[in-house]
Length: 460
Image (cartoon, rainbow, N blue to C red):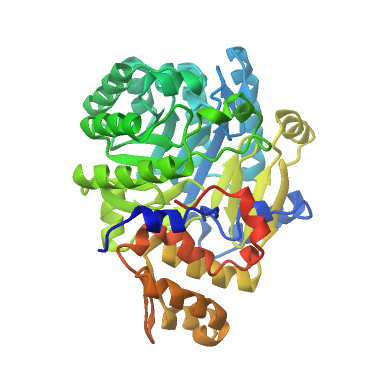
């Protein structure tokens, strides 16, 4: 593999989608609503052996006790924990409306609780939520059942409770261990607390523990982030997610509290990324792809080696591509050849359910061209290769003719050592894997106008 130089990183320091879907969520339209979503659900129910095709479930819990200034998630800041109980009632109603359309007992092989802060809910409320899901769906053995955890909201007893409820994967939001950075983003969590929680999670027996980090935050320097990287290497989580902070205060109101002059410059961000790649490699982590690293014996790294990696709205997964039901305010789903998203405000979400409507307010029915390009993009993002013949047989096209312009663009990337092209297909090189979003963007017809890119985070 050629060296990942700062020059190469700087060249690809451009905005682009994360490709948890294609087309991306910014392409959803309000013309797609509840009626279209119900039609997709009923097509699934009438399809071949629907009970044999496992579902993925995402549950959005929007509440947080305090505001993290960098956050771009859909959340509600409140210290009123009594708001959790009525929200669970609405989730139960949303599940009931789904069961009416697809039937009870559908198999589920992947469940993810995100937010917000899922651990804002009390132990009893989390138990109530899981009991409600289990009474309507069948959580199959060997599935991925994960929850996002704010380290400030749990102790070892709570982690044991999460394990007893059936969660086998945890994701701790760390972002940075430096006290000055934590203060600047309004998220104080001492390093020793995180270490104690990760150690407890290992004792309890969670199959995989992830830590989220962000570079580009206020008060960060390459030297300060080096210290965080060293601490993470000592912590040794099974997985690491490393995200670039995208400062978009005009879109995300909380970010207006960040003092712009405190943000590291572009060159320092690139330096932090380059040092992160080197630090994780030295610590023995496998680069799974797109911001994700895993220890060699983690299921995600194994899936990468075996070519079984998949990608959905939760990111990389070991589970086969499945229909996804999104539950809760702003949640996104994928059923068949459609995408859908729930109402983004709690008031609208609850009002629709009060009137017995599924709270879907936007989405997309994908076209034949979308499906074709999705297949190519996901093959690049997950397997790092595209075999022309398999695409041609599945979609009845001549690949080189259909994608003549795209292949011409890839020629420049081949010269840079990022891909290899021949008569049989496209292969992303070991170096190119670090820039796979840029390779995938070549096949995104919606990105032809550069002006659309500003809405995305940087691809590295």
